[in-house]
Image (tube, rainbow, N blue to C red; front, side, top):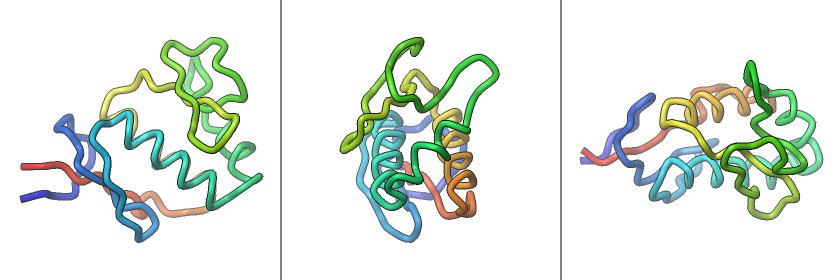
Length: 114
């Protein structure tokens, strides 16, 4: 049975984001799918909010892949996201992006198989 979870390393099968279900098959897919959905929902407001979500030593979302370890282009945008992240880091980043865009962290949940 699939369960909603936080901070697990099991392979995800989907996510719930802002009340909508999405199918995914990897944590990288979670990150790219959530970024794509948020970029579509927030349009031009996505980039400034996402640029404000930074780590101690790196930018997670940027206008170019320079300086990223494993950059991935966010589908439908000219933006890049650092895809070299653990399952826990992906979930934390998604929650931080949600807050930066005015949503509650609880509006995201990863769904993993048992």
